[in-house]
Image (cartoon, rainbow over all chains, first blue to last red; front, top):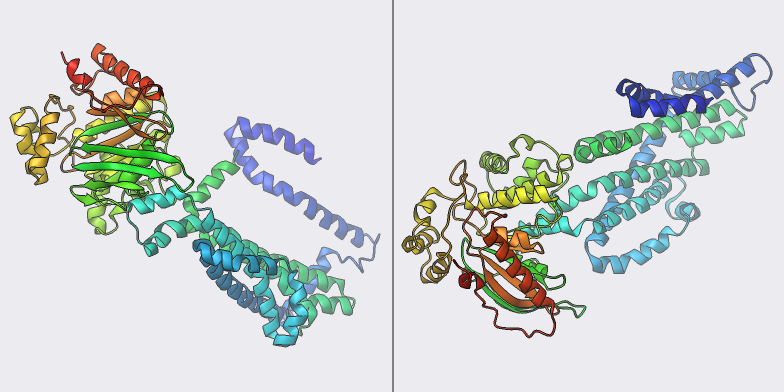
Length: 280
Length: 316
């Protein structure tokens, strides 16, 4: 079905402007067709009694669970716990990754000295650190936050270093011609040149941060969305698990969107380029 | 005066790019450096710009040794090299950060007006055509009022029409100097007075001015109009592989020969401006430069003392 809809749409998008404008909104909506359709279908199947929906709860039940959690105040407690862990871990990882990445990108000696070690550490699956962190830092907040920070650190470090190394020598020469000092060169040439890649690195880092918060909360927590997952498993409440997953998805998307929006004013010159390209 | 004294460059990888290149370039003069690939033209220009240090010899501007980028020396590259995150106006004003915003704004506006892009001040560089972007690069270089403007194959990436247009435009901008300039430009005797007045220098320039006086100057109609970017005319040093471009623009053409890059022949172009690309004389200069280029690549020919003044022997 999707094929028959999409094919003429693409052709129309090339041919006429009104059709193209319609296509701009219709095309993303097309992506919703499958998940929404399946959700509705499942809802219907459970409602008609073909399945009891015990292991795979229908959307209405998931929604009810979320509402119930919200009403009892549980939801905000768990969300706050998780968000503060991600926030702290992300912050620490970003600061460390940015500083070290910048040093290694800017200064070849530091890169030769530090980068091999960092790359070796990166090769370790981050979850392998968990037992050690728990021994070192205890089972409470610190070990969780450090684990998240480790997850965030590597993509940010790599992104910053790679971006600095990739800055066009020709653009740097423009700065040299205008006799920019070291600091002015960083502020007026390197920083803006690196920013697009940095934003991407932050978003990748944030994604990993959300991944690691789940791991950290599954290991041992008395609150947090990860705890809700585990609790749902142990008490046999699949609706609660799905509810937690949905909230993870919403929060992950929302925080990612925050970065995007915060960076947008600085990337206007580039953003429009992306739009131009994406239209084709 | 821009003086190059036995400038040589050997890159760390052992490539001998430039050998004992000497030349003296007078204030306000337009010199084209032409030669086959690998003859060290760009190396030479980068040494003058202070971007790369010469391995031997010196570059001096008014007696000051150039070893790093200098405020009085501007450069326009083959690519516009605009900063994509700054608007057109931001790019033009990039080198004026120490000025107050008001002064900077005025200078930027007048520079943009002079390159005919006043309406593009708020555009992003990506929205410009190749020719427009290079105009912005020209404005960015000129707004800093350099005494010497280096051009590294500045129009080679453009199509033939745009290239021609920008060549003429560059000449207009160059000719468009202070009004008191033109008063003296026509008569030979006053040229030395003019240079010493505008540059505050003496003897050294008179020789330079005298050699220039062979070229009776006719300023372009645009000269003297509009806001001024430069005070005195900047010296232009142009690297090109385009014979046409060299003859259209330059007072002198320096032909280089490769491996290692060195000066082969110097040709004076004693043609009045504006130059008619279709004229027979223009063609004769072009052919002369072409012949010199051919000979420069002929390895059987020895280096010679590069001071042929064919322009003079051909002169009327």
